[in-house]
Image (tube, rainbow, N blue to C red; front, side, top):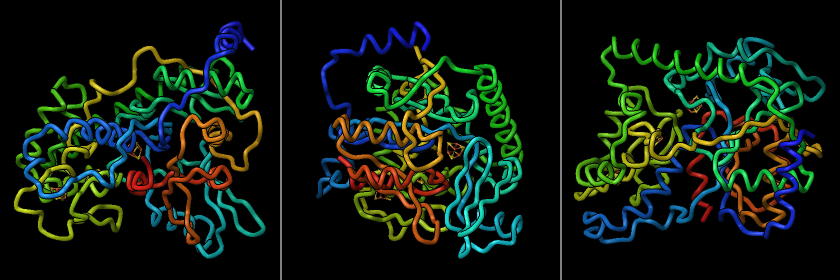
Length: 388
Ligand code: SF4
Ligand code: SF4
Ligand code: SF4
């Protein structure tokens, strides 16, 4: 262990036990962005005049506390159907024969009853969701801790510590020997990928603009606009059809689920990787869906945790059942629940048909079983319905 890491562990000895948050949300960058908006507007909305005109209290389905977020590195994502098509074409396997799919160390692994086949994720790229090409947030900047494979050698994950809470949590896990850490192996590999990701997002924006699409969230990525002003303007004007016109029909929706979570009228359902409005919005539309959508305005400058970050290469000290990110995410979640640093965790798993499914649980066994699940396109933020 290096001097720096030794001093980190020494620092933590004797720190008191204290909960970090009621719930820990695990997700990719766009989902983390949505969760931060929900967190912020849950408080701000209470002071907005239009809200008080509504006949019912709009928050019963929103978590009201701050979320501790573990963000997952992500450069592209795939719908369940596109992964299914890839597997059928590549190996001639139907999903009935497939027991588990996971992506680790730059490869996709497909497990059947008696075999495991794998391919480079580069082969999957043509099947990636088009709107991910617009995304500049590879490292989940809005999270407390980000985890991913790039920058570390085999068996290790890169961990980015972003907030004081993230650092405290990591240091306690290290002191408890739940994880093992080293100096980051290859920062240049990470920096190169971040640069490449930003270049691709600028290129994709330009090509969409040539087709006449307004890519509003990228134009405002680094703006210093007041998030509360944005909320006020949206609260007065926006209804679901505007979200549809500005985000969904321009191909910017990332199917995060945030709009569905906050709609007080249960007016939004998810199908075919996008949200649909079920009924007309009430005569006094609230605009919450537009407000929390990560693709209307992100407020990256205001809320992203990009200052004073620390990077490490980390692996789980105990193998925790799955292979995703070398088991680091599972190890951290299990540690957090066992030490009561949060009461529940919101994670992705898959159903019997291997479709992604989100759940909020306090059961360590379920967390271990979900290890290795692919965080594919799914409205994961809806999982916060079960959180506080
Ligand atoms: S928009 Fe796509 S690439 Fe960006 S974080 Fe979300 S799923 Fe990943
Ligand atoms: S769909 Fe209509 S009622 Fe629901 S959050 Fe959006 S504006 Fe409000
Ligand atoms: S439209 Fe809804 S599901 Fe799509 S990105 Fe916005 S909040 Fe998420």
